[in-house]
Length: 583
Image (tube, rainbow, N blue to C red; front, side, top):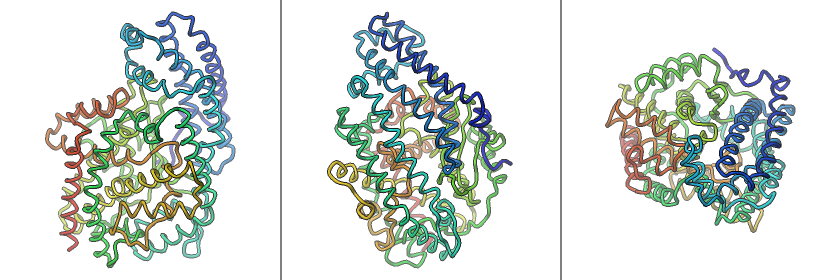
């Protein structure tokens, strides 16, 4: 079975003549689109709307092919300067779309009869939601060449700082027990069954950050200041307001979810303290034991075994999902193993031209890696469910982005727990699920609090590495509380998590996904096979409706705190069982 993904369906390399040809087509298409938007004021409105959409569809197809290939190549090898140069060329070309897209949006949103025009045309009706958002967001557009300038400046600003963080964390040498390794490999040791290995790896990880902390602190400060200034120029009240509007999500939904999460924080701390005591710690759980395995789950998972297990498991839910999982393994969609220069963590990227996805993971043969693959394959299934949409209708919002991935986690974990007959195995599985849930609830809340404090302070001050560590300590205190040993937290989480190195909040969507998916899985348990078509329709709806309207497909009111409490109560019940088992 393959160890790396196959990207030949896009291009056979950066020296493939098709790559340069498509890049030139993209540049020519953008120039043509710019000329077109300059003529819009004198055009028939319906003709202008149709042609504008058609031109943007063409640019989307070309741009996605180039950007997907370049970014996938870079994530698999961040140290190759030639790849970085190609990424820069593609991003520079794409930045030229900002000005004509803004001009089209400003013109279209200014049409008094826009709604009537959209409803009168079959093509435009498919973009009803796009035009509704266009009209709402037009007030935040920068006048003149503002959008073009901001896009250009981002290439040497926020985007460049983000690439620096990725480069530094993927290449920093880590000295572990006298040997040199990489950050991805050392962080994987947090799941090792040997307590001494976990502790030594934790100390080695923290020690390596001293080499790069100042440069990464500059990156974070620069990205966040750019975001603050951009939001102020556009008229947003805050970066959070911009995130919510970009997410097509109401503040009432966020407040209901966060409020319920805070209510249940004591329950998660109970879990952390119970795990700590079971591992011999009386002052809360030290960070290096957060991912410590418990119970009896010592089997090694090969890639081949993982494939067969996931294909069979998901066949019990939906044949379409199972068949896609088989294709992902058999047709080289996945880059499996950690290596120097490769990005850490895991992600899934849709490849629209191929009607497929590509998945990067750092597989280490543990059951947690199987769950991670199931999570990323959920993203791939989500991409497949929206593939029939028109090109400009294939982007779903951040909160809904974690729906299918976390639903897959619910399927695999619930199946594994139900099948476990031995108490030690059951403990291992429940604890595995709780540690993952703790990350997307408790740790995500700490990330949300950290990012909120950084955005609040950044307009008036530069926060060096030591100050960022202090802010992270405070954020972890607010979320983990006495669940963690106060002397053994992780002050450098701001440095190693790539989620901070984008322009807006990229944290609470994970909590949303975890809880929303649990609610959907509860529907599946009640309704059985009858729920599956509804679930697919919900995924299909995600790019063309708000978060609230998407949830209504399954009869859910996201602004009702009781929905979130019910999802959290299921986790609380698992914590109670865990505490009983470890006693």
